[in-house]
Length: 292
Length: 236
Image (cartoon, rainbow over all chains, first blue to last red; front, side, top):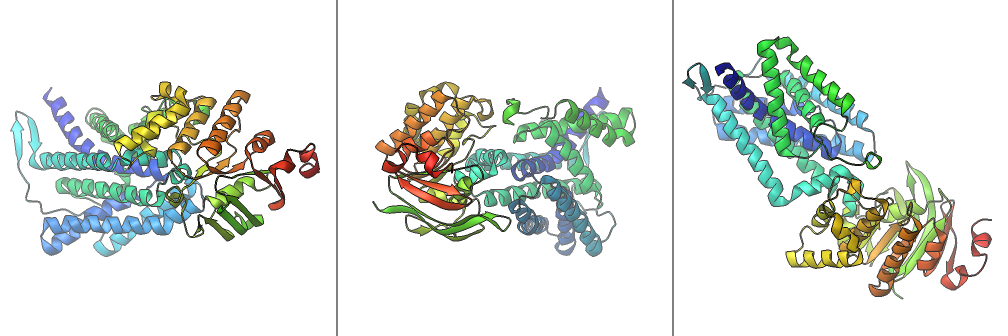
């Protein structure tokens, strides 16, 4: 029982961190139709730029603000110089996917060149834990969940206040028609890329607090987030969070009872089964096939 | 009649290849211009160019004196110009009620309610499918919602790209009735691209025939209602 509670708690925290990446990835994919694999590079860029600034200034506020500025500028440049021109040329999704893969590799290479290949660790002042029998809640985990929930809530409130969800749903459904309704789709695309990237960098910084981070982690978490995209075919923050947590519970269970090496294999096996038997995703709009 | 929309020496196309060549046309306020022609003649390309979907063009388009060459598609609604997209103006995953919420975003509650009420008064059947998603509507319901969306935009000039395509005869009649009402009661200006020539003849004040990307000929209502018009001017 205690093991189960520990797994659930750990999965809940990891699931929240994954959901920050998955929400951004889902919104970017659904709105822009770009399978934005470079999200993994942005994720690492956020964490590493925060780490770099913290080492220079020892000021958390400045470091986080710096990381947010770096990823925002980076994704803005990527959108304006790569994705948007491809979109205007009406290139197909596989072209933007290849471009995104290239961008991921370039981002990681540049980070490795300037900051080195080694694992980066924060000198965090948050330490200690709360023990209840054999169940342990670390202070870092509590901090991670609090900030992650706050970020998710902030994004939800932002969408509600600006009434952006319908706009994004419209762009996701039909970009050309959205323009006819007066939507500046280029602005909508930039906004969704920037907000998605900020959420990913917050997740990366929080993750780095606990275990540190190497350059390869971005790809792994982005691929897991891509499973959420397939499972949830809607622009729905709540469902992204729910499926992220369920996915991490599954992964933790496999890790504990089977073999840690099977964790990602089984995750993607589920993805393939969903694609084969329910292409439109587990949670999707029930629409007439001839209209899809 | 003062000209609301003027097209001057317009050439445009795809991937650097011109589909339209040197088109000049004008439409006065409250006038309906029908564009007819065979498949691939460039009718839809003309509307897409006016609507700034195609931006690779030479020549100018002026709407209410404003040059459209340096405008984006999303600016046109504000200027008073709407494009009725071929296939209808329906978002598959949005509920009918959400379509109204989306198109009326930014308007006051009372203004939104008034516009919505006006739309429903034209298409009462929409009231019973507010919770249906666009992708689950029948052809007739899609058409009603599309016209309601057009109406809710409160624009002066409509670019209509085959608004009756794929509809059953009764739905075509409803569409023509609606557009006629808009012309008579609201004094809407329209450029109507139609495959169904009878629809074009019924609604238009003048007709332009496009052939191989050029204006082949244009006619006033008195001329195109004459017998054998199509045989004489389109099919030979």
